[in-house]
Image (cartoon, rainbow, N blue to C red):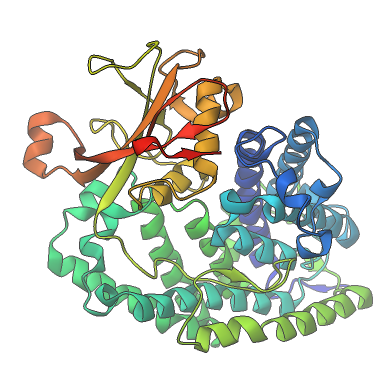
Length: 501
Protein backbone atom coordinates (compact mmCIF):
# COMPACT_ATOMS: atom_id res chain seq x y z
CA UNK A 1 0.00 0.00 0.00
CA UNK A 2 1.28 3.47 -0.87
CA UNK A 3 0.03 6.67 0.74
CA UNK A 4 0.84 10.36 0.51
CA UNK A 5 3.48 11.73 2.81
CA UNK A 6 2.30 12.19 6.40
CA UNK A 7 2.36 15.27 8.56
CA UNK A 8 5.90 14.76 9.85
CA UNK A 9 8.07 13.58 6.95
CA UNK A 10 9.88 16.91 6.59
CA UNK A 11 9.90 17.30 10.38
CA UNK A 12 11.87 14.06 10.60
CA UNK A 13 14.16 15.17 7.77
CA UNK A 14 15.19 18.39 9.51
CA UNK A 15 15.16 16.91 13.00
CA UNK A 16 17.40 13.98 12.22
CA UNK A 17 19.94 15.94 10.23
CA UNK A 18 20.22 18.56 12.95
CA UNK A 19 20.49 15.84 15.62
CA UNK A 20 23.22 14.22 13.53
CA UNK A 21 25.23 17.45 13.74
CA UNK A 22 24.97 17.39 17.55
CA UNK A 23 26.09 13.77 17.62
CA UNK A 24 28.99 14.68 15.32
CA UNK A 25 30.20 17.40 17.70
CA UNK A 26 29.81 15.07 20.68
CA UNK A 27 31.91 12.32 19.12
CA UNK A 28 34.54 14.75 17.84
CA UNK A 29 34.87 15.97 21.41
CA UNK A 30 35.19 12.41 22.66
CA UNK A 31 37.90 11.68 20.08
CA UNK A 32 39.97 14.62 21.30
CA UNK A 33 39.19 14.86 25.02
CA UNK A 34 38.19 11.45 26.41
CA UNK A 35 41.66 9.86 26.48
CA UNK A 36 43.51 12.71 28.24
CA UNK A 37 40.73 13.11 30.79
CA UNK A 38 39.52 9.52 31.28
CA UNK A 39 41.76 7.16 29.32
CA UNK A 40 44.16 4.47 30.56
CA UNK A 41 46.51 7.09 32.01
CA UNK A 42 44.06 9.98 32.05
CA UNK A 43 43.38 12.53 34.75
CA UNK A 44 40.58 10.30 36.11
CA UNK A 45 41.01 6.87 34.47
CA UNK A 46 37.63 5.33 33.73
CA UNK A 47 38.93 1.92 34.81
CA UNK A 48 38.81 3.15 38.43
CA UNK A 49 35.06 3.46 37.91
CA UNK A 50 34.39 0.22 36.04
CA UNK A 51 36.35 -1.78 38.63
CA UNK A 52 34.04 -0.55 41.40
CA UNK A 53 30.65 -0.11 39.72
CA UNK A 54 28.85 -3.15 38.23
CA UNK A 55 27.87 -3.13 34.56
CA UNK A 56 24.13 -3.16 35.33
CA UNK A 57 24.45 0.22 37.10
CA UNK A 58 26.30 1.90 34.23
CA UNK A 59 26.05 -0.13 30.99
CA UNK A 60 28.96 0.66 28.69
CA UNK A 61 31.10 -1.01 26.06
CA UNK A 62 34.10 0.21 28.03
CA UNK A 63 33.71 -2.61 30.53
CA UNK A 64 35.30 -4.70 27.76
CA UNK A 65 37.18 -2.02 25.79
CA UNK A 66 40.07 -0.75 27.85
CA UNK A 67 42.81 0.60 25.58
CA UNK A 68 43.16 4.22 24.50
CA UNK A 69 43.48 3.10 20.89
CA UNK A 70 40.15 1.27 21.04
CA UNK A 71 38.48 4.23 22.75
CA UNK A 72 39.63 6.60 20.03
CA UNK A 73 38.53 4.10 17.40
CA UNK A 74 35.01 3.94 18.86
CA UNK A 75 34.87 7.74 18.99
CA UNK A 76 35.76 7.90 15.28
CA UNK A 77 33.18 5.21 14.52
CA UNK A 78 30.70 7.55 16.17
CA UNK A 79 31.93 10.38 13.94
CA UNK A 80 31.41 8.19 10.86
CA UNK A 81 27.90 7.17 11.92
CA UNK A 82 27.10 10.83 12.61
CA UNK A 83 28.08 11.69 9.05
CA UNK A 84 25.63 9.05 7.81
CA UNK A 85 22.96 10.71 9.95
CA UNK A 86 23.76 14.26 8.80
CA UNK A 87 23.74 13.35 5.13
CA UNK A 88 20.57 11.29 5.36
CA UNK A 89 22.28 8.14 4.12
CA UNK A 90 21.35 6.38 7.37
CA UNK A 91 17.70 6.19 6.31
CA UNK A 92 18.11 5.44 2.62
CA UNK A 93 18.00 1.66 2.89
CA UNK A 94 14.88 1.22 4.95
CA UNK A 95 13.76 1.26 8.54
CA UNK A 96 15.99 -1.61 9.65
CA UNK A 97 19.24 0.04 8.50
CA UNK A 98 18.07 3.36 9.92
CA UNK A 99 17.46 1.80 13.31
CA UNK A 100 20.88 0.15 13.25
CA UNK A 101 22.70 3.45 12.58
CA UNK A 102 20.73 5.48 15.12
CA UNK A 103 20.84 2.64 17.63
CA UNK A 104 24.63 2.40 17.37
CA UNK A 105 24.95 6.16 17.81
CA UNK A 106 22.95 5.93 21.02
CA UNK A 107 24.81 2.87 22.30
CA UNK A 108 28.25 4.34 21.62
CA UNK A 109 27.48 7.65 23.27
CA UNK A 110 25.85 5.88 26.23
CA UNK A 111 29.15 4.04 26.66
CA UNK A 112 31.08 7.31 26.93
CA UNK A 113 28.60 9.00 29.26
CA UNK A 114 28.18 6.12 31.70
CA UNK A 115 31.90 5.92 32.50
CA UNK A 116 32.65 9.62 32.00
CA UNK A 117 32.11 10.55 35.65
CA UNK A 118 32.60 14.24 36.45
CA UNK A 119 33.65 15.18 32.92
CA UNK A 120 30.41 13.77 31.47
CA UNK A 121 28.06 14.81 34.28
CA UNK A 122 26.22 17.58 32.42
CA UNK A 123 22.50 17.67 31.70
CA UNK A 124 22.98 17.92 27.96
CA UNK A 125 24.69 14.50 27.93
CA UNK A 126 21.53 12.77 29.14
CA UNK A 127 19.43 15.03 26.94
CA UNK A 128 21.35 13.83 23.88
CA UNK A 129 20.90 10.21 24.98
CA UNK A 130 17.16 10.55 25.58
CA UNK A 131 16.63 12.39 22.30
CA UNK A 132 18.89 10.00 20.42
CA UNK A 133 17.05 6.98 21.80
CA UNK A 134 13.69 8.24 20.52
CA UNK A 135 15.18 9.04 17.12
CA UNK A 136 15.88 5.32 16.61
CA UNK A 137 12.16 4.71 16.08
CA UNK A 138 11.37 7.39 13.48
CA UNK A 139 11.62 4.93 10.58
CA UNK A 140 13.50 4.89 7.28
CA UNK A 141 13.20 7.51 4.58
CA UNK A 142 10.42 5.67 2.73
CA UNK A 143 8.36 5.14 5.86
CA UNK A 144 5.92 7.63 7.36
CA UNK A 145 7.27 8.74 10.77
CA UNK A 146 5.23 7.37 13.69
CA UNK A 147 3.26 10.25 15.22
CA UNK A 148 3.79 8.88 18.73
CA UNK A 149 7.54 9.42 18.53
CA UNK A 150 7.05 13.05 17.49
CA UNK A 151 4.82 13.61 20.52
CA UNK A 152 7.35 11.91 22.80
CA UNK A 153 9.99 14.34 21.52
CA UNK A 154 7.68 17.20 22.48
CA UNK A 155 7.43 15.65 25.93
CA UNK A 156 11.22 15.79 26.21
CA UNK A 157 11.18 19.43 25.10
CA UNK A 158 8.50 20.23 27.68
CA UNK A 159 10.58 18.80 30.52
CA UNK A 160 13.69 20.68 29.39
CA UNK A 161 11.95 24.05 29.29
CA UNK A 162 9.46 23.72 32.15
CA UNK A 163 12.08 22.14 34.42
CA UNK A 164 14.43 25.05 33.75
CA UNK A 165 11.68 27.53 34.56
CA UNK A 166 10.68 25.88 37.83
CA UNK A 167 14.23 25.47 39.12
CA UNK A 168 14.86 29.18 38.59
CA UNK A 169 11.80 30.29 40.55
CA UNK A 170 12.51 27.85 43.38
CA UNK A 171 16.23 28.24 43.88
CA UNK A 172 17.47 31.80 43.56
CA UNK A 173 15.65 34.98 44.65
CA UNK A 174 17.25 36.98 41.83
CA UNK A 175 14.99 35.14 39.38
CA UNK A 176 11.99 36.25 41.40
CA UNK A 177 13.07 39.89 41.76
CA UNK A 178 14.16 39.95 38.07
CA UNK A 179 17.82 40.83 38.74
CA UNK A 180 19.66 37.63 37.72
CA UNK A 181 20.76 39.03 34.37
CA UNK A 182 22.62 41.80 36.19
CA UNK A 183 25.23 39.08 36.83
CA UNK A 184 24.65 36.23 34.39
CA UNK A 185 26.48 37.43 31.27
CA UNK A 186 29.64 38.10 33.29
CA UNK A 187 29.61 35.09 35.62
CA UNK A 188 28.34 32.34 33.29
CA UNK A 189 30.77 29.43 32.85
CA UNK A 190 32.25 30.52 29.53
CA UNK A 191 31.29 33.89 28.03
CA UNK A 192 31.45 34.37 24.28
CA UNK A 193 32.12 37.43 22.07
CA UNK A 194 28.58 38.81 22.51
CA UNK A 195 28.41 38.33 26.30
CA UNK A 196 30.33 41.53 27.07
CA UNK A 197 27.89 43.58 24.98
CA UNK A 198 24.82 41.86 26.46
CA UNK A 199 26.11 42.66 29.94
CA UNK A 200 26.09 46.37 29.06
CA UNK A 201 22.37 46.48 28.29
CA UNK A 202 20.33 48.76 30.61
CA UNK A 203 19.09 47.17 33.82
CA UNK A 204 15.49 47.71 32.80
CA UNK A 205 16.19 45.53 29.75
CA UNK A 206 17.73 42.86 31.98
CA UNK A 207 14.66 42.87 34.23
CA UNK A 208 12.31 42.66 31.28
CA UNK A 209 14.41 39.83 29.85
CA UNK A 210 14.02 37.79 33.05
CA UNK A 211 10.26 38.25 32.70
CA UNK A 212 10.52 36.90 29.16
CA UNK A 213 12.51 33.94 30.52
CA UNK A 214 9.66 33.07 32.87
CA UNK A 215 7.00 33.26 30.17
CA UNK A 216 8.99 31.21 27.65
CA UNK A 217 9.93 28.52 30.17
CA UNK A 218 6.78 28.31 32.29
CA UNK A 219 3.89 29.18 29.95
CA UNK A 220 4.97 28.48 26.36
CA UNK A 221 5.81 24.77 26.94
CA UNK A 222 2.14 23.89 27.48
CA UNK A 223 1.42 25.00 23.92
CA UNK A 224 3.76 22.34 22.48
CA UNK A 225 0.77 20.00 22.77
CA UNK A 226 -1.78 22.46 21.36
CA UNK A 227 -3.33 22.24 17.87
CA UNK A 228 -1.53 23.87 14.97
CA UNK A 229 -0.50 26.59 14.44
CA UNK A 230 -0.22 27.20 18.21
CA UNK A 231 2.25 24.35 18.68
CA UNK A 232 4.47 25.67 15.89
CA UNK A 233 4.31 29.21 17.29
CA UNK A 234 5.38 27.86 20.68
CA UNK A 235 8.22 25.99 18.98
CA UNK A 236 9.30 29.10 17.08
CA UNK A 237 9.32 31.16 20.31
CA UNK A 238 11.48 28.45 21.90
CA UNK A 239 13.89 28.46 18.95
CA UNK A 240 14.28 32.24 19.13
CA UNK A 241 14.81 32.07 22.90
CA UNK A 242 17.42 29.31 22.65
CA UNK A 243 19.04 31.14 19.75
CA UNK A 244 19.59 34.17 22.00
CA UNK A 245 21.17 31.96 24.66
CA UNK A 246 23.41 30.40 22.01
CA UNK A 247 24.32 33.88 20.74
CA UNK A 248 25.32 35.15 24.19
CA UNK A 249 27.01 32.15 25.81
CA UNK A 250 28.85 28.84 25.47
CA UNK A 251 26.58 26.15 26.92
CA UNK A 252 27.92 23.26 24.84
CA UNK A 253 25.04 21.83 22.79
CA UNK A 254 22.28 22.48 25.35
CA UNK A 255 20.72 25.33 23.37
CA UNK A 256 21.38 23.76 19.97
CA UNK A 257 19.81 20.45 21.00
CA UNK A 258 16.79 22.21 22.49
CA UNK A 259 16.35 23.96 19.13
CA UNK A 260 16.52 20.54 17.45
CA UNK A 261 13.81 19.25 19.78
CA UNK A 262 11.65 22.28 18.98
CA UNK A 263 11.49 21.13 15.35
CA UNK A 264 9.09 18.44 16.59
CA UNK A 265 6.44 21.12 17.25
CA UNK A 266 6.08 21.84 13.51
CA UNK A 267 4.21 20.04 10.76
CA UNK A 268 5.20 19.47 7.15
CA UNK A 269 3.05 22.28 5.77
CA UNK A 270 5.38 24.73 7.52
CA UNK A 271 8.70 22.99 6.83
CA UNK A 272 8.27 21.74 3.26
CA UNK A 273 9.28 25.08 1.64
CA UNK A 274 12.58 25.00 3.55
CA UNK A 275 13.53 21.72 1.87
CA UNK A 276 14.32 23.67 -1.29
CA UNK A 277 17.27 25.17 0.59
CA UNK A 278 18.85 21.76 1.30
CA UNK A 279 21.01 19.67 -1.08
CA UNK A 280 18.61 16.76 -0.75
CA UNK A 281 17.95 15.81 -4.36
CA UNK A 282 20.36 12.89 -4.48
CA UNK A 283 19.61 11.38 -1.09
CA UNK A 284 15.86 11.74 -0.59
CA UNK A 285 12.86 10.68 -2.67
CA UNK A 286 11.77 14.28 -3.25
CA UNK A 287 10.87 14.50 -6.91
CA UNK A 288 11.74 18.16 -7.34
CA UNK A 289 13.79 20.38 -5.04
CA UNK A 290 12.84 23.56 -6.81
CA UNK A 291 9.18 22.63 -6.66
CA UNK A 292 8.76 20.57 -3.51
CA UNK A 293 5.97 18.07 -3.89
CA UNK A 294 4.63 15.47 -1.50
CA UNK A 295 6.28 12.09 -1.91
CA UNK A 296 4.81 8.67 -1.38
CA UNK A 297 5.68 6.68 1.69
CA UNK A 298 4.51 3.45 3.22
CA UNK A 299 2.98 3.40 6.69
CA UNK A 300 5.08 2.06 9.58
CA UNK A 301 5.22 -1.71 9.58
CA UNK A 302 3.33 -3.63 12.22
CA UNK A 303 6.66 -4.51 13.82
CA UNK A 304 7.70 -0.84 14.06
CA UNK A 305 4.27 0.15 15.36
CA UNK A 306 4.53 -2.53 18.03
CA UNK A 307 7.98 -1.36 19.08
CA UNK A 308 6.78 2.25 19.22
CA UNK A 309 3.87 1.27 21.47
CA UNK A 310 6.35 -0.52 23.75
CA UNK A 311 8.55 2.60 23.83
CA UNK A 312 5.49 4.71 24.70
CA UNK A 313 4.68 2.42 27.64
CA UNK A 314 8.28 2.56 28.86
CA UNK A 315 8.36 6.36 28.66
CA UNK A 316 5.04 6.67 30.51
CA UNK A 317 6.26 4.40 33.32
CA UNK A 318 9.68 6.03 33.60
CA UNK A 319 8.16 9.53 33.51
CA UNK A 320 6.86 9.02 37.04
CA UNK A 321 10.14 10.05 38.62
CA UNK A 322 10.83 13.15 36.49
CA UNK A 323 7.24 14.36 37.02
CA UNK A 324 7.55 13.74 40.74
CA UNK A 325 10.79 15.71 40.71
CA UNK A 326 9.14 18.61 38.86
CA UNK A 327 6.42 18.79 41.50
CA UNK A 328 8.80 18.48 44.47
CA UNK A 329 9.89 21.50 46.48
CA UNK A 330 13.45 20.12 46.50
CA UNK A 331 13.63 19.81 42.71
CA UNK A 332 16.88 18.32 41.37
CA UNK A 333 18.26 20.30 38.43
CA UNK A 334 19.61 17.52 36.16
CA UNK A 335 19.20 13.88 37.04
CA UNK A 336 18.83 10.46 35.47
CA UNK A 337 16.62 7.85 37.11
CA UNK A 338 17.68 4.84 35.05
CA UNK A 339 21.12 3.68 33.84
CA UNK A 340 20.09 3.95 30.19
CA UNK A 341 19.10 7.64 30.58
CA UNK A 342 15.78 7.01 28.82
CA UNK A 343 13.65 9.56 30.70
CA UNK A 344 15.39 12.27 32.69
CA UNK A 345 14.77 15.52 34.51
CA UNK A 346 16.34 18.77 33.37
CA UNK A 347 17.01 22.29 34.54
CA UNK A 348 19.50 25.09 34.03
CA UNK A 349 20.88 27.92 36.15
CA UNK A 350 18.84 27.32 39.27
CA UNK A 351 21.28 29.69 40.93
CA UNK A 352 23.42 32.52 39.58
CA UNK A 353 26.87 33.35 40.89
CA UNK A 354 27.34 37.01 41.74
CA UNK A 355 31.13 37.15 41.26
CA UNK A 356 33.41 35.47 38.76
CA UNK A 357 36.50 33.60 39.94
CA UNK A 358 39.08 32.10 37.63
CA UNK A 359 42.02 29.78 38.19
CA UNK A 360 45.20 30.91 36.47
CA UNK A 361 47.59 27.98 36.09
CA UNK A 362 51.25 28.90 35.74
CA UNK A 363 54.49 27.00 35.36
CA UNK A 364 58.20 27.63 35.47
CA UNK A 365 61.34 25.74 34.53
CA UNK A 366 63.43 27.29 37.30
CA UNK A 367 65.08 24.73 39.54
CA UNK A 368 63.86 26.53 42.65
CA UNK A 369 61.16 29.23 42.46
CA UNK A 370 62.02 32.56 44.08
CA UNK A 371 60.38 35.95 44.29
CA UNK A 372 62.12 36.73 40.99
CA UNK A 373 60.75 33.69 39.15
CA UNK A 374 58.97 34.39 35.87
CA UNK A 375 55.80 32.29 35.92
CA UNK A 376 54.29 31.49 32.52
CA UNK A 377 50.49 31.06 32.27
CA UNK A 378 48.74 28.23 30.44
CA UNK A 379 46.13 29.68 28.08
CA UNK A 380 42.87 27.76 27.77
CA UNK A 381 40.72 27.30 24.69
CA UNK A 382 37.60 28.83 26.13
CA UNK A 383 37.77 30.06 29.70
CA UNK A 384 39.23 33.52 30.43
CA UNK A 385 42.90 33.83 31.38
CA UNK A 386 44.48 36.71 29.45
CA UNK A 387 42.35 39.83 30.23
CA UNK A 388 43.08 41.19 26.75
CA UNK A 389 41.76 38.16 24.86
CA UNK A 390 38.27 38.39 23.42
CA UNK A 391 35.99 35.64 24.79
CA UNK A 392 35.75 33.00 22.03
CA UNK A 393 32.74 31.18 20.61
CA UNK A 394 32.89 27.40 21.09
CA UNK A 395 29.31 26.23 21.54
CA UNK A 396 27.83 23.91 20.50
CA UNK A 397 31.20 22.16 20.93
CA UNK A 398 31.90 21.23 24.56
CA UNK A 399 35.21 22.08 26.29
CA UNK A 400 35.05 19.75 29.28
CA UNK A 401 38.20 20.79 31.12
CA UNK A 402 37.36 24.49 30.85
CA UNK A 403 33.91 23.89 32.31
CA UNK A 404 35.22 21.89 35.26
CA UNK A 405 37.78 24.59 36.05
CA UNK A 406 34.91 27.08 36.30
CA UNK A 407 33.34 24.90 39.00
CA UNK A 408 36.69 24.37 40.72
CA UNK A 409 37.28 28.13 41.02
CA UNK A 410 34.18 28.55 43.19
CA UNK A 411 36.08 27.38 46.28
CA UNK A 412 39.26 29.01 47.70
CA UNK A 413 41.12 25.67 47.82
CA UNK A 414 40.80 22.54 45.63
CA UNK A 415 38.04 20.21 46.75
CA UNK A 416 37.77 18.11 43.62
CA UNK A 417 39.79 14.92 43.56
CA UNK A 418 40.73 15.22 39.90
CA UNK A 419 42.54 18.53 40.35
CA UNK A 420 45.84 17.29 41.90
CA UNK A 421 46.02 14.58 39.22
CA UNK A 422 45.52 17.21 36.52
CA UNK A 423 48.39 19.32 37.89
CA UNK A 424 50.50 16.17 38.04
CA UNK A 425 49.90 15.63 34.31
CA UNK A 426 51.23 19.12 33.60
CA UNK A 427 54.35 18.39 35.65
CA UNK A 428 54.87 15.19 33.66
CA UNK A 429 54.51 17.10 30.39
CA UNK A 430 51.68 14.79 29.32
CA UNK A 431 51.19 15.36 25.60
CA UNK A 432 47.50 14.49 25.51
CA UNK A 433 46.67 16.88 28.35
CA UNK A 434 48.77 19.65 26.78
CA UNK A 435 46.64 19.33 23.65
CA UNK A 436 43.63 20.51 25.67
CA UNK A 437 45.21 23.96 26.01
CA UNK A 438 45.20 26.79 23.52
CA UNK A 439 48.86 27.53 24.20
CA UNK A 440 51.62 25.57 25.93
CA UNK A 441 54.10 28.12 27.33
CA UNK A 442 56.88 25.52 27.34
CA UNK A 443 56.56 24.21 23.77
CA UNK A 444 56.13 20.60 24.75
CA UNK A 445 58.65 20.50 27.59
CA UNK A 446 57.60 19.81 31.17
CA UNK A 447 57.76 22.57 33.79
CA UNK A 448 59.71 22.06 37.00
CA UNK A 449 57.00 23.65 39.11
CA UNK A 450 53.32 24.52 38.70
CA UNK A 451 51.25 26.89 40.76
CA UNK A 452 47.59 27.87 40.59
CA UNK A 453 46.36 31.32 41.59
CA UNK A 454 42.78 32.44 42.04
CA UNK A 455 41.56 35.78 40.67
CA UNK A 456 38.31 37.70 40.67
CA UNK A 457 37.44 38.69 37.10
CA UNK A 458 35.12 41.50 36.03
CA UNK A 459 34.20 42.89 32.66
CA UNK A 460 35.85 46.16 31.81
CA UNK A 461 33.60 49.15 31.34
CA UNK A 462 33.14 50.58 27.86
CA UNK A 463 35.55 53.39 28.73
CA UNK A 464 38.17 51.00 30.13
CA UNK A 465 37.95 48.86 27.02
CA UNK A 466 38.43 51.86 24.76
CA UNK A 467 41.53 52.87 26.73
CA UNK A 468 43.15 49.45 27.25
CA UNK A 469 41.57 47.12 24.70
CA UNK A 470 40.99 44.62 27.53
CA UNK A 471 37.77 42.65 27.91
CA UNK A 472 38.47 41.81 31.54
CA UNK A 473 40.05 43.29 34.62
CA UNK A 474 41.16 41.01 37.41
CA UNK A 475 42.19 41.11 41.04
CA UNK A 476 44.36 38.53 42.82
CA UNK A 477 42.42 36.70 45.55
CA UNK A 478 44.55 33.86 46.89
CA UNK A 479 47.08 31.14 46.14
CA UNK A 480 44.90 28.19 45.23
CA UNK A 481 47.40 25.35 44.88
CA UNK A 482 51.16 24.93 44.94
CA UNK A 483 53.82 25.71 43.94
CA UNK A 484 54.07 21.99 43.21
CA UNK A 485 57.44 20.48 42.25
CA UNK A 486 57.94 17.75 39.67
CA UNK A 487 59.67 15.57 42.25
CA UNK A 488 58.27 12.25 41.11
CA UNK A 489 57.04 11.42 44.60
CA UNK A 490 53.37 11.28 43.69
CA UNK A 491 52.57 13.81 46.40
CA UNK A 492 51.24 17.20 45.45
CA UNK A 493 51.55 19.87 48.12
CA UNK A 494 48.86 22.46 48.73
CA UNK A 495 49.53 25.96 50.08
CA UNK A 496 50.53 25.74 53.70
CA UNK A 497 52.28 22.40 53.21
CA UNK A 498 49.17 20.17 53.14
CA UNK A 499 49.70 17.20 50.84
CA UNK A 500 47.27 15.24 48.74
CA UNK A 501 47.97 11.75 47.43
